[in-house]
Length: 356
Image (cartoon, rainbow, N blue to C red):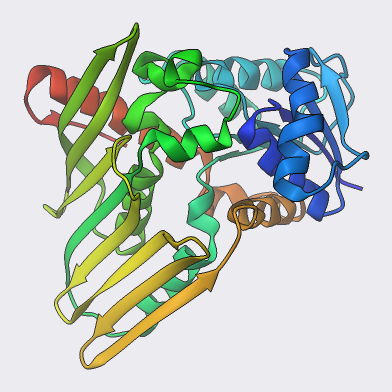
């Protein structure tokens, strides 16, 4: 049986614990806060999934140094790389290490040390946490793009605009962003880091469509200081590749109802891939020449994580899967480099050259 350890008993840890439970895996969740572990057992997990899985092991302060096939890091962003570095230095390294988004803080602290260790530990496949790159709407979009004669790509825009409400519905124990990393951009909170699904999706589709390597970043970010918080309320990025293709990314924590989609404009039509098109569905909508289609993809929130877990399961059997994986850790690293450049661009009010 596959053994999994999950760092963090918060919202994301519960999602991954349930997804692993669905696979029939042996799951251990560790957290430094006993209150978080009790909240997981008595409130979060049963309220979301209708029961508590007594087979899930809850562990305080990571006291178990046994071997695990898969380790998932789902703690606040500023601790991600510290934990990953410790794991990569340990004797009982896993086959698979997955790190939730954002990978780290915008200053890229600990990234150099992490990169050195991951290159020394090539037997450990490392993945990021951008789960929407493996959901059915993305997979269907790729299939449609491959099969239809859309023509030239004219535009690529990606959006993840959603106010705090949805986040705090999932983190009901928090009363405001001030009580966690969310209200502090330097800790990995705010629009650019927390909603970086949009940026990563842009990079993913740009790569899939062969639009070139990202070359330049220009940004406009609205930073907000209130009640001792300091976070980016909204961010707009203009991205240019070395093939002179230009597209845009929009992320915020103020939009309601939320807007989460990728829109690709072609010379012969368009395609839009939606996350949470309505309360029950993702969607893909496209028009190509005289053909028009709308696909609703029925889902519940737990379904957003099944693609990642199935991907990790496949990686156990295929040792080099990470090299071509849409959630390879290299994509998470690229995302954070763009975020760092975006903050610099906003500060200097100019375009920033970037190499990823």
